[in-house]
Image (cartoon, rainbow, N blue to C red):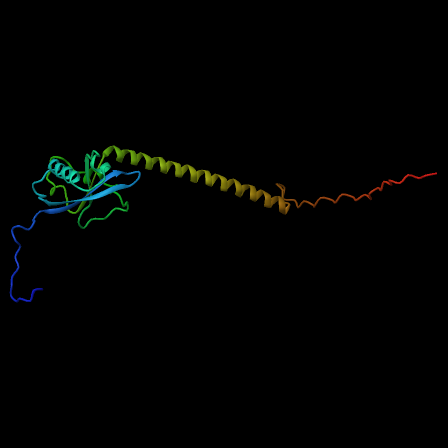
Length: 198
């Protein structure tokens, strides 16, 4: 029984129903500021469509969409698979940063042969290189900061350790030093301000 209440009705797929794949494409405008917008492209034949044809379809979809002008006028030149079916997802919320040689799409193969399934990203490759170099600089900065912090902690530890040794009175010869003798107190002299009159 279906929702309309009739029994025994067999439902078939109508020929007007879209049989192609639906792809979600991330338009990555900036890696530094993590600016990206999704674009959904429908009726894609993964077996015959090449990357060049997909680029034209995506460009037409972006021009006709309600995206802001910075996304419409940006030069996207690289497609990369975000994740594949039954594969591991990346920890980076913006783009998969691993396996560039396997996940960046090639021009001469169909999309099905390259493993297109669900979501992939389109971006500018010069920004990828800039992002990678900024990550390397950040890692070097963090390493230097940790090294400086370690040096400061080590110096404080050494100075604290020598302070404790001096506090306990143990020098290099391990003799217990006697406390310094107190200074002898001298009585204060009073100066009289009154003059004797005769």
